[in-house]
Length: 102
Image (cartoon, rainbow, N blue to C red; front, side):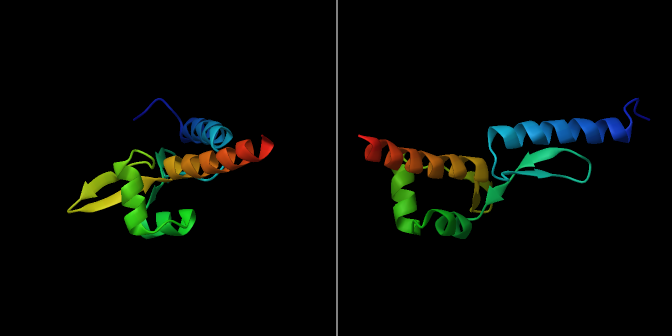
């Protein structure tokens, strides 16, 4: 039996989640029933939809180190960290806004 109560675990998980959301306000993390926090993964189709970038261009940008690489899951299945895709989108917005300010 653990010395840590479920209320303590819940409070700690809530604190970690708040910190994660403060760092990255979009929901890029999932809180599991046990209170652990894991990064959210996106399928390629979800990445294409979020970024409005097609598959071939997505892979071309990865080859040029201009887009985050996916995580290998198994059997040729890959997924992207939602936080990295989110950061990439924010960087594109910052580039636009920086260019407009000049």
